[in-house]
Length: 138
Image 1 (cartoon, rainbow, N blue to C red):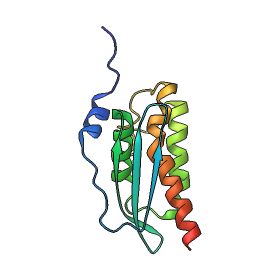
Image 2 (image 1 turned 60 degrees about the horizontal axis):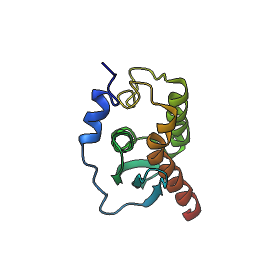
Image 3 (image 1 turned 30 degrees about the horizontal axis):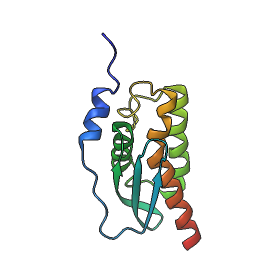
Image 4 (image 1 turned 90 degrees about the horizontal axis):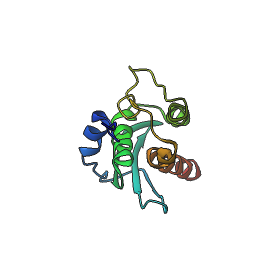
């Protein structure tokens, strides 16, 4: 029997419906024209710390699960720590290894085929855009 395309953890994350923030500090959108995935990331920021993350996604289970994992993971983190967090996701995709205690472990509990890395990274790329937008607002 063939292995399931998505792990149970990814399916569970993807089943949750993200919500947009009512009054985000910044928002950013990214699209993947190859597959049609589209994601919007909203951030609420105060005193250099993420207070809330929201968004919307139209995409595959990996893209949806990635946004939900981000929504769960980022609140309470300082803005200064986010570039390293984004890099953690990128490294985990390539190395197919993440410590089990990491909040992102359910997203990356099974190797993601290389052609699908873009699906997982799309919300994180939108986050990078949001952070860039924040730095130009300051």
